[in-house]
Amino acid sequence: MRLEQEPRVADVELAHGLDEARTLARKGTHDVVVLDYHLEGHVGTELIAGLRELPKAPQVVMLSASEKTEEIIASLDSGASAWVVKGAPVGLLMQATEEVLAGRMYLHPSTVRGVVEHLLADLRGRRETTFVDDLSERQLEVLRCMVAGLDRAEIAQRLYISPNTVRTHAQHLLRVAEVHSTLALVARARELGVRGIDDEDASSR
Image (cartoon, rainbow, N blue to C red; front, side, top):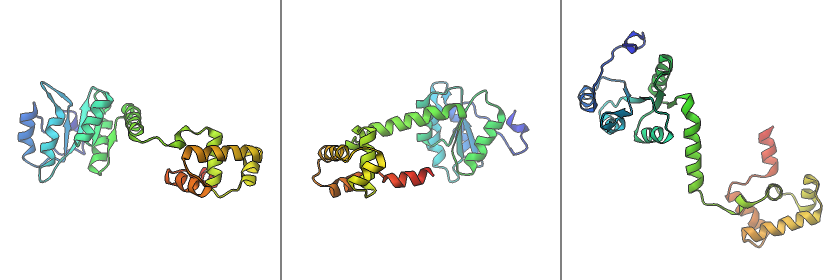
């Protein structure tokens, strides 16, 4: 009833359950499906696969009281393009609808942090650790100077440490990287995404 009052909404149809939703979806006249995650005896995402097979597949906006990160990610993985928390102003629902119609995704502001942190943790868990991950801040600075092409005297001057300290760090880096030359160390570091210290400074500026 509230959506029908929106001037940007041409028509609204209501389905009570997945079977009725599937019947309405076969008409192929809907631009957006607003779908609850929790249905009696079912999960709303069960509908999405069928929607995606339609000649004109509608965009799916999940509208749920839940803010559980796992459920949000599962919905996005199933093909939903947005998640709005029940109780939010109808303006947010309309914003989510406009975003998905424009080909973008939308997450309710209260859910963004949890989703991003979960995905980052999953990414870190899958990424193989390397010698770079175990370096101290000073060791990493020395390595970045080496990647930038600085010699030991220049590194000492740049980092305000003695040449002997630079040599100690360099020997440690060669050992943990399991290489036998500075050229090989620099090449390995670049493969792992280590940037030269000057490149980092330039990006900061």
